[in-house]
Length: 164
Image (cartoon, rainbow, N blue to C red):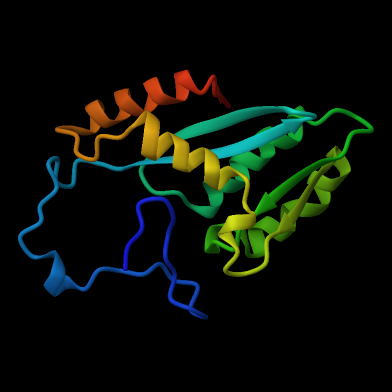
């Protein structure tokens, strides 16, 4: 049970569904353990206008990376304006470190809200990621990490995304 457009989780476990080792045999990565690319992003809504903002990560996404990204967003908040960041229930979106920063972010005008569990269809940015992965980057296999990054940056450029 895998989906190209979303992540599957074991119900009640909060853990990403993993392909059993016996099913993975013989499937090798083209670049092996040379690296990994992750994308942190936010979709800003201003009336009818949408703006995708992103940060490209070389390596895994951690809570520290999310906190740093939210710090950047908080610094951009305008006085007397309300900015709400809607997060899913990924492990790195929660925890003590997020709670320690929450009061300071709220003073800057940045508020965190969480989606109900198992409701990715309520997350507006999922449609943006689907467009990015399904239409702007339809190729599923790249010969190198640099080739993948180049394709990703080209797709983000087509979406007029802004790097944070």
